[in-house]
Image (cartoon, rainbow, N blue to C red; front, side):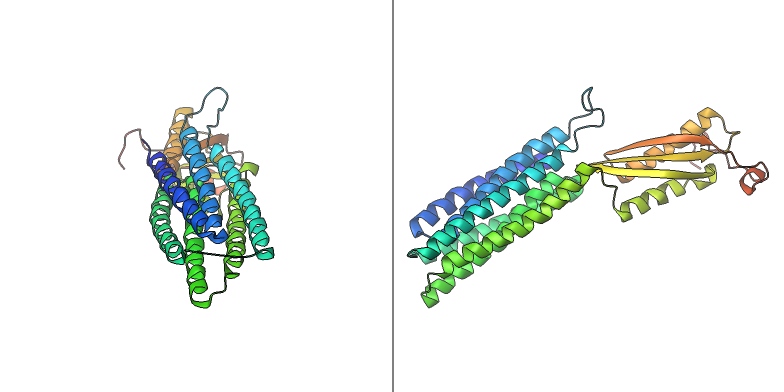
Length: 307
């Protein structure tokens, strides 16, 4: 089982338990802030299920229907996660406003503080694991799940602090006010996740650092070609797509040029495992008295050479 799938499964298990505990605690206490945290965790659970499904599907190899693979399903999944979080934030605000307009009564504050503190600890540990696996696997869906859980850490700590403040001040109105703050934090994170998930759906190029790395890797073979241009890049979930035009000396044999292109593709894939590379070969059309033609490109070493 792939690490991303195992990590997503762990998130499903942890969120299932937290939803049950928070919901029961919130109902016992009559606390809208604790119930809002239960709703937040429920959305985290949905996000974890979506992430689990998407990382499994994104790992499938290309087929007749999806010749470029299934990587973008992770971006779609992350976008759905963000939209669900927006909906949950709206519900929390409406419920908090209803509480503000009526009588606010909160009981069993100690239980609430303990549950929120325990939830924050569990989500912190799980989110750290998800962040690590997301970086290792380049999974945007898993990163979205980690973002959700890390937000839950902050909001759980906030709710716990608010319940403690109610205990010491007796101001129960703090409960719905804290819930509204939780909702605003959720909206902020959902907006960031929406932007990150949506951009690859529009075939936005790789980051400046990643494109610079592409140029550096291709440039390491500079003695064996004249130049390269028309570099195009895009990302689909954990997959990267790179294509470029490679200009070679016209005297090079087709087999030599093909072997050079293979080595460039291999070098790029060694840096990014899930990378599709397309290299278009062009013969140099410059005047025969240019510097590169007076000093022709060095032929590539024989296949299997270690030099």
